[in-house]
Image (cartoon, rainbow, N blue to C red):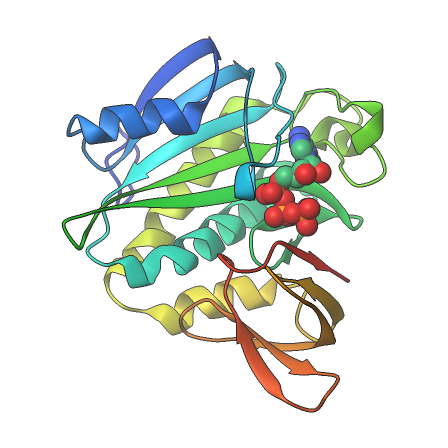
Length: 250
Ligand code: ATP
């Protein structure tokens, strides 16, 4: 099915029933020269992680994968996360008729709870971008542990029964293929506007936790480099990058 998919990325799936980390496996095969489009899909990940090494809960039933990309320039990395977020959100609506929204930089939310997290990691060799691994963790038919229930939700909970996971995965990959083409062609405004259409972030009051400070303000825009533009309480307008922001709270 993936081979026949008419989209910009030539996908090749590598499937594991169980693994320690899909990001690490994808990294390993990328280091060994695997082409763009190779993706590692794991049924269950023992040591999955989110941003800044935070633990990600990835038991059976969820959609957990890491995709290898080889974009020409590092400047696209933040846009890749935004494009994947938009693709996941649109795919959920296309396949399940369920509405979701996007929380900058990397989450898809339903009823203010996290349904999906996205993690983009770049490898730079000799000053040039070697590859990017985009990790996607989508709560589909998996159970969530009690400690996450206040902040996370699964598609099964909303749908009322198991969702068709493979058609949803296919739709995500199809849509992301076309979003990625926009990135490669430099159609940055199109990516940002696809993301903004589903934004739950712009116009909201936000609390931003950085390496050494916590600031408050109102999110006003997404810049063309994927940064979040915030009108701070002190009246200054500042740009924030995903790589520097530990937590964003509404
Ligand atoms: P935060 O949600 O803390 O603001 P973030 O959106 O950047 O940060 P990540 O670092 O991408 O989050 O993901 C890790 C966090 O997600 C964990 O700290 C945990 O709270 C939460 N989490 C872990 N597993 C899941 C899951 N399956 N579904 C939803 N949330 C999860």
